[in-house]
Amino acid sequence: MAPAKKINLKDKVEDGEIDLSMLSLEDVPVREIASVKKVYSLDLSNNHLERLPNNFATLTNLTKIDLSKNNLKELPENFGNLEKLVHLDLYKNQLQHLPLSFHGLKNLKWLDLKDNPLVPAIAKIAGPCLDNKQCQLCAKSIIQFYSEMNEKVEQMKIDQKAQILKNLAYKAKQEKKKKDKKQRQKDKNDNLAKENIKKEEIETISEQIIEKEQETRLIVKQRSSSGSGVLRTIFLLIFFLSLGLFLLTAFKVKYLQSTEQHIVSMWMMLREYFPNYWENYVIIFEKKFVHCHLLIGNYLIRIYENLSNSPYMLLIQDYIFYTARSISKQLNEVFHNIL
Image 1 (tube, one colour):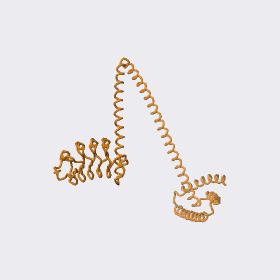
Image 2 (cartoon, one colour; image 1 turned 90 degrees about the horizontal axis):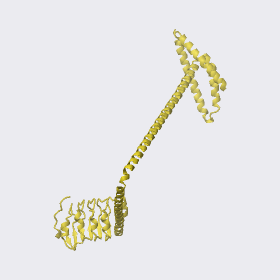
Image 3 (tube, rainbow, N blue to C red; image 1 turned 135 degrees about the vertical axis):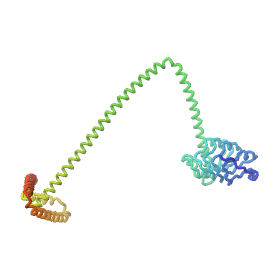
Image 4 (spheres, helix red, strand yellow; image 1 turned 180 degrees about the vertical axis):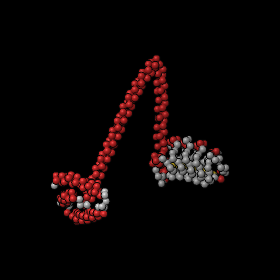
């Protein structure tokens, strides 16, 4: 902390009040202030104070202190020794907590804690302090709060002392039982050994359960992947079969003429189940499909005619007719059962 700035206090004292405001102070000249007799009010507002020295609480004759508009981050733990304090202004600092000794300020009647980053609990108790009445209520509430907190701390100290006495009594009692200590320790070790065995067994069973769960998940995953592969294979078979059937019927292979008629009949049956508002779309689809079917058929026939002199064409023709015959036989049986 920076050394106290030398100030001529004689010029700052008037009617028991010391005005040290707006002097850019970084430390409080406590000894110089204490040397002034019959002073009850101290104004340290609008300075650069970040902390108060521990001997600040020796200014016990003060009844009014103004520390507003500084950078105070904390107050000394013995701040509560200022028992005569009635008016305290801490407006616009950086305080988050107040010292527990605040309960000692029994005569405090006015307190302003506005514009401090107080923790929510203290901020709620302090209130807004927007007028004189609210600042009076703030002082009363804060003193009551810290008094209750001090009582709890004192009770905790009493409980701790009682616990210490209880522990001492317990140790004295343990000293009397040294003869049985070895046997108890042996029994304890035996119990620990049994517990460790049980823990190992539980861990082994848990590991086995986890391994089985992982195996089950792997099997489920494999089955799921296998099922997906089967569905994909079936979809591809249906797609290529439909494509092949489309091309062969477009090519006007003779064995598939009856199959083509069955397909048309089945389509006409399905049309009866379509909603009426679909009719225009169905007609457009039929026209486009027939047009595409004829166009592809004519294109395939032209290719076939151009390649008819090829020595491999007979083999290709036999393969096409054989495939068409097989497809026609199988599909005609299916259509016969349906229609």
